[in-house]
Length: 314
Image (cartoon, rainbow, N blue to C red; front, side, top):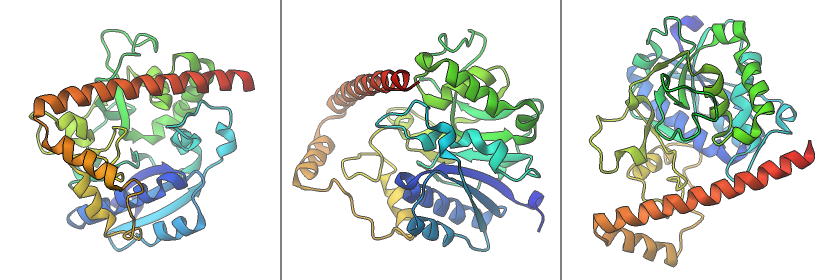
């Protein structure tokens, strides 16, 4: 079987997200039993030997896996925070790390699960576009990034990428150059850099290919193809009330991390869950909005601290 007969999917993570990458890959493997075979390319930003071995165990006749060691020193002076590690920037190494014969890839964040085969996504015609991605409405920073009113801001959690064009035009290098010169404008890390460089050259994807679970609350959306756990309360925490937490746990139990225990499971969190699950929807919505705003405030404070630390080190 040649590489053209396979779908090439790329993930990037460090050891903190190795388990979640594994769960995403398990869900992909299970879905592709009714689709084309896939070749997963994992960019290693510091994965432990134990977790690397577990990730290699995931391959079968539906899924092949290759692991590439990333050069994390390249991102040693990049902006990081409590929420974002240097491994988040590893996808900016795809031009160098991935085999030269690969012309097209699907890049995916690790905090997601697949709900159907990705054949239809893979077969989208990019035409003259450099990538396809889903619209992101959380785009308060558009003006800072130089994005005019005629163009939109995309979410980089799932991207169909013309890798051949990226190499020709050195897209990753342009994004890195932009980030290194504009840290004060950056709110959403390398996603902002990708938008600043590519906002004129992306093809909008059906939102089903990158459905945030927060989008499903109080909204009528079609069934998702890929569920992206983009909020702070990830499904691997007991306190999470994510409507797709059960799907994450289902694939977790099929993985080498099947004995995982919630690190935050205790009587206080149990009471917290019971209270939130019992209160009226209108009250829950108000609590959710308040909590979201508080977390955004904390994240912005964290970003400002990280930015000051970065400026001191330069």
